[in-house]
Image (cartoon, rainbow, N blue to C red; front, side, top):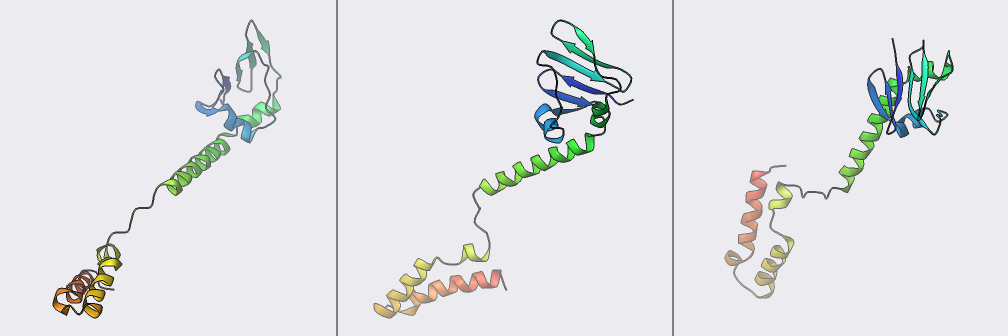
Length: 146
């Protein structure tokens, strides 16, 4: 037999599965309870509300309570959706790691410009300027063919 319990510290338990009261209220926003309630138990046959100093009989049959007993799939789906959203946002906040491979191993643009400047403007030989950078580029292209 299914059982609904509103536990202290804002916990809703349905058939042994526990959910935060705020989550439950997202699914069942009309749910109410006395301010001085300590515990509520409902199983279809009995409905007891434990207050600070006494206990009272709750509504029987409790139409809303019968519906609450069927809400586990909805609560689990909402819980998973919230967890997925939190993970997604955390992933978005993570700094992007540079891609490894072809692009990261190519000579930096500054190195290319300096080699060309030294060869074409300063007239230094190709062997000590652009050929060195070109060899690096060819090794990367060989390592990572398109």
